[in-house]
Length: 155
Image (cartoon, rainbow, N blue to C red):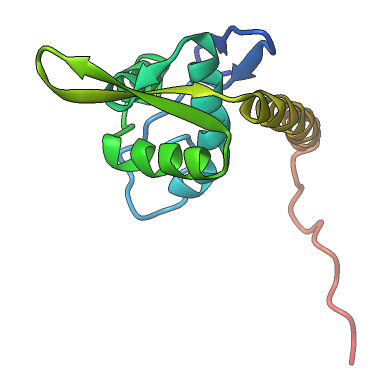
């Protein structure tokens, strides 16, 4: 949920809910938003599978669908390696379709193994989200008080 209280929901057979992307002008620092490469690295394959579950897409279309979902800084340079890994691992299949506007387009769709992996990843993500929410709620209700740090042990 972002500061305005909005939640982005990617609706498909597993009804995955993800927090809306929060952009930050700070670069080179931990930002804690979905533009943080470390956060995105772990969740992007799941999000790609989720979007492809709605309907097949070629690479550039997938990038724009992810951008439209709130991942504004998403680029082809980020998505194509994920698609290649998913295909290599048998989680997506592809087919070439002739295009009147240039070279043939490679369309991707999840395989049965991809659907199974999406369900597993979605369950894990939801468990992690519940745990993170619970820990953050506890932190918000019990702010640290000055001098509450544990005393150093005497040697």
